[in-house]
Length: 354
Image 1 (cartoon, rainbow, N blue to C red):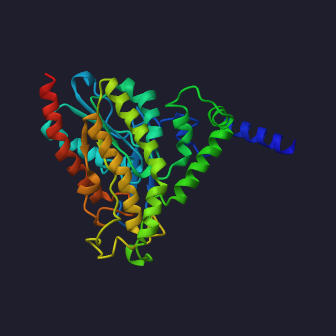
Image 2 (cartoon, rainbow, N blue to C red):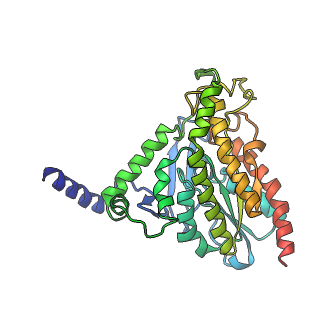
Image 3 (cartoon, helix red, strand yellow):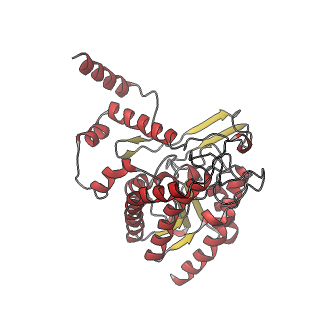
């Protein structure tokens, strides 16, 4: 009875006052409309000393919808932390920089950043159906990969067959209870920390190194096969739902600093460095590349544009403050790589539709 009444008190408290306003409740996304986050930065030497991150009336980063929205050429970028660029100041995220590049060649262009830190294709699909289909941009850019790796907690998504009528007590509790939603988000944060996904500046020269174990690598690749199949299912449904609505999807593979060779800036061996994986950078890169291969395969199967950022972005710590997240210089490089593939495609696509 004490536990029961304690839970009731927690539920009432969270309904009156939410100390941590999470952006997810159950399977609903709560976009932070008209918000500005401003903080002093002392932990990331590669970033601005004062960071300002703003959300517009849509809950995204970027300019407000133009009055002539239907006549404009419109883009929304969707992804996790490597799209939102949460701790890059306004104007420095790669999506904003991409918009600046596009406007120079394609006047009357509107670009917004709908990235949400920590989100996978599970969240992207909900964002699409609950928000983006109503906005109906011309293009949606999906940068996917790192938040799919080993995600066994997304099994309920597949069971529901993309939000069908599958119901369990856990799902009901997360959706209808403030306490359930709060605990679910705390658990998501724990999983992110366990997978080394939180933002942190890394000094490559101070990291440990391990030898590459080919036998263990083979076993790990086999272990991830069920997750790869589930990811392919979710990504295919995401792409098809986008196209069915008359929106052109574009897929972007997930880059990482880790992998073959040496860091161009520090000279550190990126294959053996013990970062993201206790078994070395080559292990993490090899696993992530299997997920990128799924992205490439879905793009081929569905006949849509693929921007292979995973191969095109140089493995240089000038561009990263950890294994995945970009510095200001990195965001500049990402925006240019995406622009150089996207702009010619958009021009051809626009002409062919006239």
